Length: 162
Image (cartoon, rainbow, N blue to C red):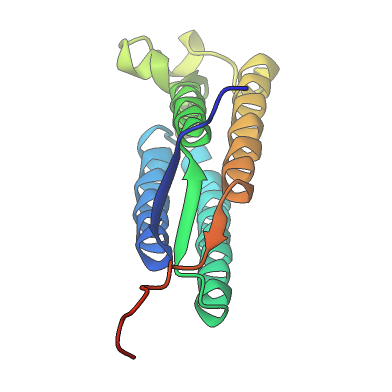
């Protein structure tokens, strides 16, 4: 059986990293969308990442009360989560506002967003389905990564003065 590498940090250091990750992720979502879709993603992304931070805060507080000051997580789960997030961001949907049409962020990178009559239909179900499926897989993997966190007590120093 292959041993999975785990990263071990202080619980509060992990919480700080989660806050930084959530803030960067929130702005990445806003950067990769456009038009009216940005308003929806502003609201939904804000709720999601604030909830994610609050869950980590509760976990960190419980760990502190139980004197479990170390947290470890699987490196592989973290890497898969980041790769899924990148895929979801590349296929994040933006729209052309009042001009009509929608596009993936990857199309915007390549300069292929033609808004108006030449753009994609704002109701293109393939685009929304692709973004929704990738986003859902990312959220599930983020929750799996969160569930893989192990809280541990700091090893006591033998012979140390109290």
